[in-house]
Image (spheres, rainbow, N blue to C red):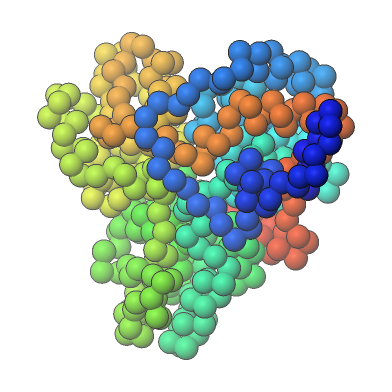
Length: 393
């Protein structure tokens, strides 16, 4: 715990809540997101950019900074590599000489980096309160209770868990322990193909929309093949017959950003911009994905816009920081945000320049802060699930 000191020492200890709000402590049972409408404020200190540069230069090869695509520009400028969550975790693992891995993303991403890097490397999250509302929608206790429900229904032995990368280390460990695998938005179909070779049913965690869209859009299943397990209802709100008849048991979770897009958003943009191409992330609702022209992961969205002809028109259904960045990179194309309501990923945006500067300066002074550590047992089973994904054809 950090003690506040001044020229005349005060007998004051920061409370756990105060430290949590400052991003210097964590609530391991909660990664809640909040609404974040409107534009982001500029950094209040004009010297922050120079301070970040100086601290990073002082650290040299000892630090490796990862920047997720959804980070704001003021942070992403200091990233050594950018990408989605799994690409960044693998990039960190490929940099064993770096003592500190500073992950500008959210908590579950830093956990994955800790799982995949060496024991000598220290993964740091600039703000420990940078969580993920989707990851928070599936806790270890809830998933264990779900497995009990499947066992009582007599189908657990037929079920293979498949967990999205956007999940906590505990959920990844559960998946590994029960013979399942992890997936990303770009390899979800391959993961499901593999899972159905192992069993008759899949428990898909924690994003219902990616699971449903992959099963129906990419694998030819029907919506009737999917049931929605609600952890807040007895037996998930499902009957034994519904569980036994289902092929896909979808967890009731979603992304707070991608869940905002609606069919009205698609219809409205087509009316406003004739000839527009609608490109959305598969975390969007099924009716949005069905109405879109193109659907794919963050990397797919970037590559599609890179390859698009000059003069083409695009409405993008994903996080706003990324949409703004690709729009600025392609002034010869008309690129707009799919929704009229502006909303950043609020938890991603907790990693701001003040937190990054504090982190880098602390490390440069030899003070390790905000280290993310996954315990050995959890790491072992989570790594097993990740390795199964890496072995997918």
